[in-house]
Length: 68
Image (tube, rainbow, N blue to C red):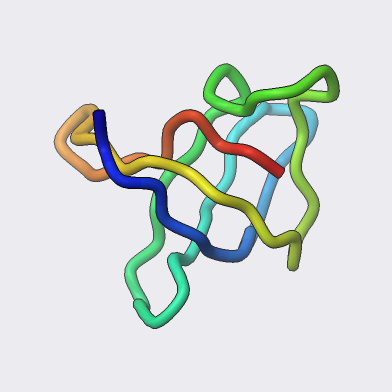
């Protein structure tokens, strides 16, 4: 199991169900999909603090098991 990280939501498109998270103390953005958000709302807001795991997705690192 991957170690949990923390970061902030940079952007999230509620209609399309995807966005980007920036881990604290890093500049690289991580892609996030609605399906990887835990909880009943399955959405995020810009500036929201979240925790997540990082996994290699389709040729890039992605945020998974995202907890608002």
